[in-house]
Length: 76
Image (cartoon, rainbow, N blue to C red; front, side, top):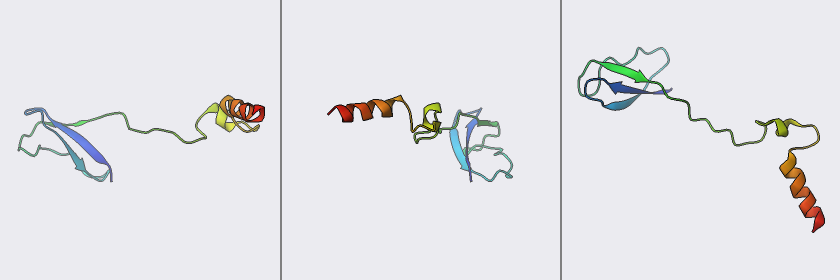
């Protein structure tokens, strides 16, 4: 179930609600004011695993950094 952030236009209070996609939007803030709007923000998604970059999808086994590391190990 997603969490939605709302802002009261009368008192400026920011609050969150856990709602189903099919639930209607909140009509009033916790303090009873009726002028409320949903706040839209960019999603907080961070891709940190392999497979998200052009160099990760090569058939020869990886990017330039991996090749440099292999060369350094071979030189030792």
